[in-house]
Length: 104
Image (cartoon, rainbow, N blue to C red; front, side, top):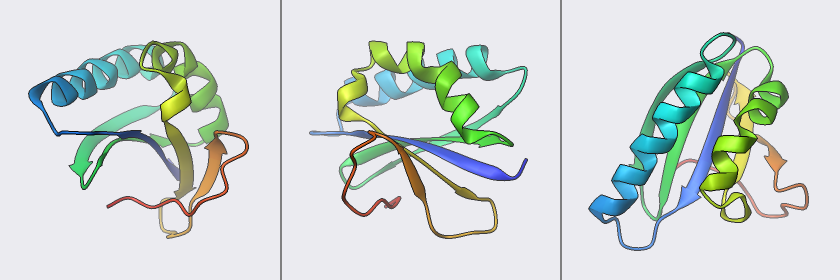
């Protein structure tokens, strides 16, 4: 797989509920994406939760994941990808994102 897709969610208090929600979404994504993309795990950082997906087509992976993500409030997430060997991310959601994206 040539790309890493990152789905990033904000967290407010790093509670057990946030972690449970992350695991639920990660599991559902694994089911939806299993035939073409590889859900590679998650990370909880300072104020954010991230799910990592290895893929050859990040836009297609996001398109397939949208139904799962809409249950998790699509308005609060940021989705970006980079080449596996790269460092710079390209944000694909939200379409009008104008901040710098990174994984903490």
